Length: 158
Image 1 (cartoon, rainbow, N blue to C red):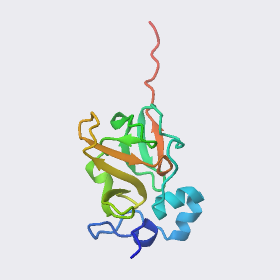
Image 2: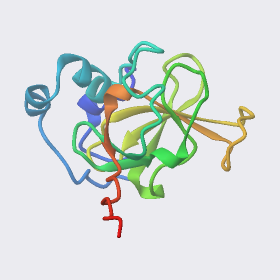
Image 3: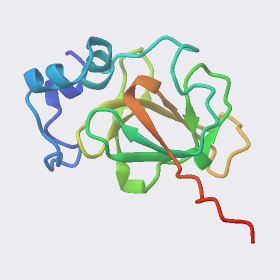
């Protein structure tokens, strides 16, 4: 049995409901680069320590690269030194969905965008990180974009 990928079953959420953003795979291939498509639609993984957001400290909102849905805020990002951006919680509990993943011969929990079903990465529990949730959302940089927070408007000295 082949494993689940967004390209294979990406129109239906794990609860059976349709994803709000649905495109056929030809359309996804036209709007995503080959590597973005591989990760987001074929559940691939980018190499560790090379992602655009692995070490960034920029404040803002991380969005799904495929559909622009809000996923994570920078204030939940932490340094896990695992090679991929790590967060301890999604922006809202309903911004991601979870699937059982046994592709490496062990049980893992896959994380997908709740709006389009794009593969984001995996979530791990109980690793001992000093975070409020004891969770590590290990997310591919290429699955996201970062929308920096707006700087406050400068005020005139008076």
